Length: 363
Image (cartoon, rainbow, N blue to C red; front, side, top):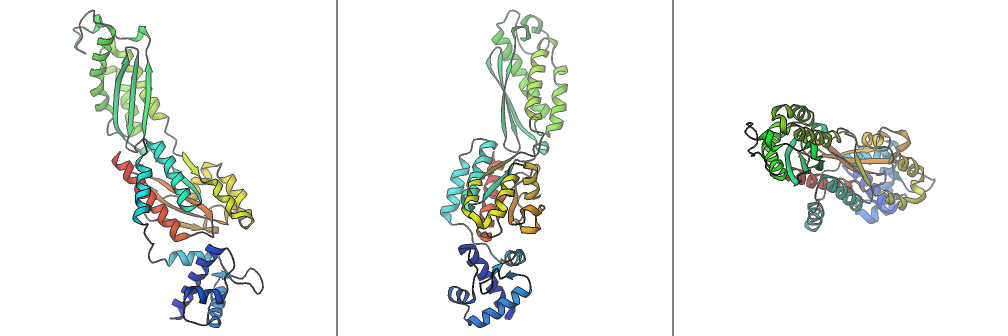
C-alpha cells in the first residue's frame, strides 16, 4: 500500500512538473490528484522518494522535481498508454496516405512527429542496401531517350533518363533475322528501339526483381552479353543507368530532421542542452546513435538523460521505435528535454511508425 502510494506521488510530481515546469509541493499533489491523504503524509513520501534518488529539491523550501531515475521509474511503471482518438488517427492516416514516394513519406513523417510531440523529430531512411528490387519499368520517350523506373521494397521510386546518341541506336539491318527482337531491314529507328525495349523489358525483370541491391547490380553487369551485338550498346547504357540508380543509395545514414524550432519554447530552462542538441542535429551519425537500433514492429524505447550515449546531451531524452519492412528496417523518434510528456510522446511515435510501415508494405 505504501509503495503504491509513493508511486502515485511520483507520478503526480512527474505529470505536474512536465505541465508547469515548476517544482511540485505536497499540498499541490494532494489538491490536484485526489490521493486522499494529508500533505504531511505526502511530505513523508516525498522524503522517501528523495532518499531513493527519484526526486530532488532544487532549492530550500521549494517543491520537488523528478530526477532521471524518477523519470525512468515513471516510464517503466506505465501500465497502459492512452490510444489516440479516432480523429487523431484519421488525421495521421490522411496526412501520410497522400505521400507519393519514400522521400515524401519520410518528410511528411518528420513534420507530423514534430507537430504531434512539439519536439525535434528524426526519421532514418530504410536500410537500402538490404532492400530488394520490387519492379523495373522501361519506357521509350523518343528513339534516343528512354525512361527507367526502379521501385524498391522500401517503397522508394527512382527515375532515370537514358540519353542515346544516334550512333548508339540499334541497327535494323543487323538485327533483322538475327534471332533477337522482331524487326525488319530498313525499319525506322523508333520501330527498332521499341522492339529492342520490348525484348529487354522481361530480361530486366528476370535479372533483378526480388534480388537485393548488390545481387541485382551484379546481374545487370551480365545482361549485355545475353543480347544480340546490334542492341548491346543500348542494353549496356540502360544497365549502367539502372546500376547507378541503385548504387546512389548504398549509404545507410540518410536521415530527415524536423521541428528544431520547437526547442525555442524551452527558453532558459533548457539552455544548457539547446546548444549541444542543435549542434547534434548537424551530425547525422550522432543522431543515428541517439536513435539506437530498433526492429520494425518492435516496442518503443525510451532513453532518459544520462542513459544516452553522449554526456553533453544529458539533459535530453530520446523516444524511438522501428518501422518499415523487415528486410530494410529503420528507426524514427524524437529528441527533447527530459521534462517531456512521455506517455503522449510514446503513443505518437508508435502510431506514426505503424502508419509508415503500413504505407511501405502497401507500396
